[in-house]
Image 1 (cartoon, protein in one colour):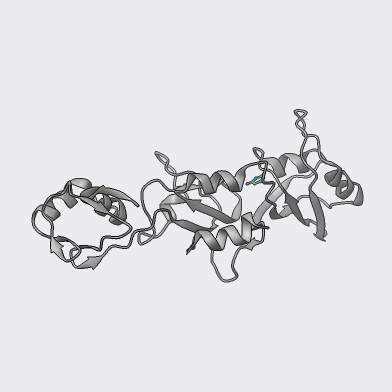
Image 2 (spheres, rainbow, N blue to C red):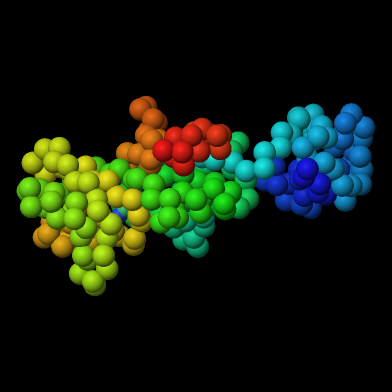
Length: 237
Ligand code: URA
């Protein structure tokens, strides 16, 4: 049961200023269950009432879940004074207030990034207790050898003494490797490769748990998903 003010509901759903919506409501542009309501502060039940504003029905979703193919050069943040963020790239028809990225990819990292306004879901995804796997393809400035594969499996100790959980390292070609980790320390993969003298030229996240970046979703594009889809492929894996 989601009871709230009519003007707040419409402005949040349509990302319109509260002032504009209030004026619109006072001019008779909103109906609740077919009746014009001119009181912007009227309390509505977003789960059960049918709200129409300027002729368009407004569906209520408590939270939204967005899968993005993060492009290079974009900040994993909700907003920034001068730089473009992943939330800036979310298409207007999905965008709403309160969106944030679930965990962070470095500015130069590409690939699968989730964006939501559901704090509990995000917490579950990144909680170390859940140990959800994250699979990356790394372009390196040198070759991966068997000792590195064994060392990553045993658990890398970073330069500052931080212990990483066991990770899977797989050679794909001479200078390209797949690495799967189950935690998300700051710059973790770059720092892990740093311990074996390898620099990371490119980093691309291909999957989180059983959720893979869909084929054909170009860099910068998003798709909206349901919580159930994500939970089934990520949290229940
Ligand atoms: N590890 C990194 O070093 N960078 C990322 O963006 C993600 C994991």
